Length: 188
Image (cartoon, rainbow, N blue to C red; front, top):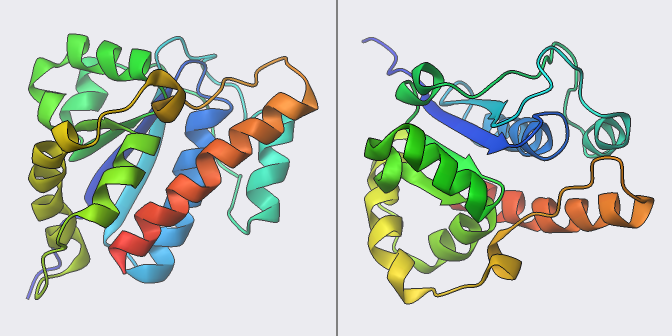
């Protein structure tokens, strides 16, 4: 029996050195604990600082939360990268719009992180299938449920901390961490 391919998730922010790498690494770490090998999480930026490592403040957050920070280099979001994804998680509504502009077919598979974290716990999770297959089935359900969960940019967007105060980095952490936790709980 062959192993099914992993469910591919892409996280997207602007520079691909703060928000999307943090979401990528924490989500991959958590999903790997729930279902080893079932998910492949990566990230990219709409205005990436190509080749750069994870920003040091963010690297510290990721390490403290038990996830790896090695072997990372920021990369630019491209239509080719988008074409390979099963789910795209944007860190702001503006990123979500840019993703859909680049690849309109992804409208049905693109959410902001905080939006998806609000929606998934509210829908009936399909049972009796593997983790990746369950997520594949949950995405259309989340899309249908999206209209029931009206929100504002303040509800959906994760603040960009780049070159800002420690308080803004802490706000970014508070925006991302519970949302990642909600997604991992839905994978259980």
